[in-house]
Amino acid sequence: MLIIDSKDCENIDKALKKYKKKFEKAKILLQLRARQSFTKPSIRRRTQVLKAVYKQQMASGKFEA
Image 1 (cartoon, rainbow, N blue to C red):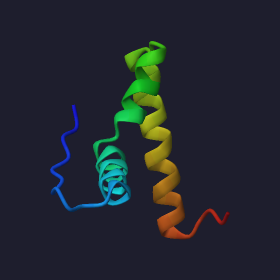
Image 2: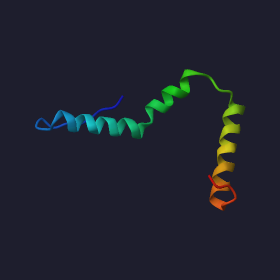
Image 3: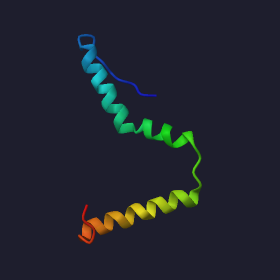
């Protein structure tokens, strides 16, 4: 649960902007999407390894996008 401290004189738009920023930093939407369907741990690990390999290739310059 996200709690936003707002002052009495603060505009509702500013409070909403703070809430949206806090919501993005907490990555709640990503967690909800991940929980919608079950992924096996082996598949989750495989995707992590493939992402790491891709990042490594991009850093070394072997793969150009």
